[in-house]
Image (cartoon, rainbow over all chains, first blue to last red; front, side, top):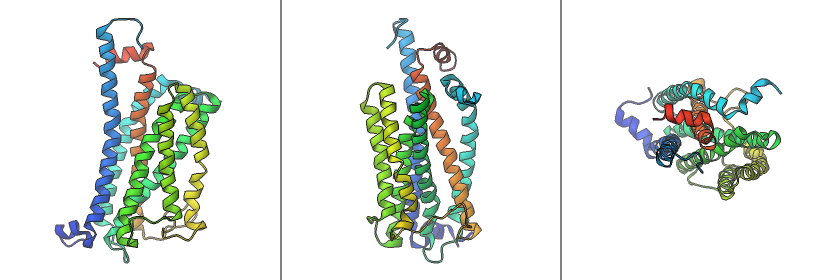
Length: 61
Length: 247
């Protein structure tokens, strides 16, 4: 461990803002890339169930 | 053509196999990224010149590598779709664009944040930075073109041609630090030489790079599976899937 204390760790030798901001943006990008397809999936399932429950038609656009 | 090549062409087979692979890659990504981040932030030694700001490398380099690999995958998948009329390849190419764009944004943003304490500027119109910005605009162009054309086949063909033309940018990014005078430092990892940093610095970086690739595989498969069921929604197996699994 290269740091004396937790405050020291947060400060990152005066570069804390830059380091933590980079990791925060990375977290946001990762989260968005997982949330977006999961939302699409839920919307798709809902729309399909609506099609099945609603018209009962053989043809659906 | 080998048998697996034809299997890849079957959307249903791809849906099944990605269903099996997804948890494996998800666990690998979680373990590698958590372990790599802890190592990168707390245990890797500080750089003797840059101090702790150098820890941005553990996000910046993996995202820059991934943004370029993702572009190459998009262009190759587009070419496979063009040549063999393989629908799944078209879907892979389409799914690459938004993921690649977000990763390119991450590479550019972390680069700017790293540039401020290191070079004293958020941005310089340097060959490496400019060619990376062009990569982001290529992703935007592919996404815009894909959504502008209603016919799926035409859209896939046009975006494939655009991504293949844009492929010329990839060697420009790679060699930009050698061809032109630049503020940007040369490549961290090369296939032929040992890294210039000590092992306790590059090992977490390697872990992060592999972790980012695993994360990409997860994001890619999630999107691809959506694309498959959406396009195959009228086929029997997707109807059955919706009635049995997605209740």
